Length: 319
Image (tube, rainbow, N blue to C red; front, top):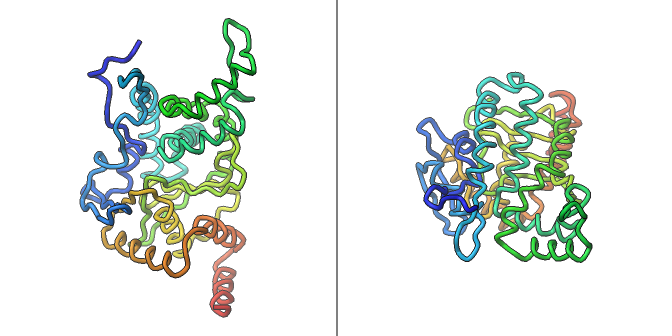
């Protein structure tokens, strides 16, 4: 039965408001840069950005039949919001192992909420098939024929409405296995230096994975939790997190954004816009994300400040 039309939420945030609030200033607003129009929307509220109408709704004959916004995501968000708030306010040691798992599941789910990642889902179906080692289907207790499965795979690749919903099966099938793997790589980096902040964008997942698989989407992941916190899921998390690494992360997020980048500090956002333009013109940024992980890996080998300063002295000498 279709959900009652007048009760269905129309505006769907692919980055939920509670998460976006971590990137606002003391007035509860941030400044949003639009890469397409080259405009900055100052003092914007999180409720008005990083959303699309009926993004997670299934339509048939032009009518919304079901939406995941209130049947799935609202429940996930309500479970996650207090945990993320506790982590940001009280530190990593304030949450339990189980709560870490809940947060990881949220971010795995969040990845598939982004409109840009529907393409990745189609590539996975084309490679593995929707019905695979992690998901099977039967009809009246009998496994579907190979021809029927092939028809379903084609439907899931070609039907836009179906794709929007079905991609969210990954976090509860193959994604559950990846959450366990990512848990072992958990690291939180907190920025204490005044003036240093993380930005957020419509595509904030920085991923290092040359061979994406259905049960290994991320491999290594960097994603900001707030303007002062970065989640690092990597065995090569650095002991020392310097200003270069901080700026590399923000430049990568900026470069990877499809359209919108938000920041709590207008002056910092304008500096980032200007630097990105110059870097793109002079050097190109096609390998920016890859180089960010490369630099992180170098930092992870440095055991103390003495080794760190020695490394940068040698680097400056080469330059």
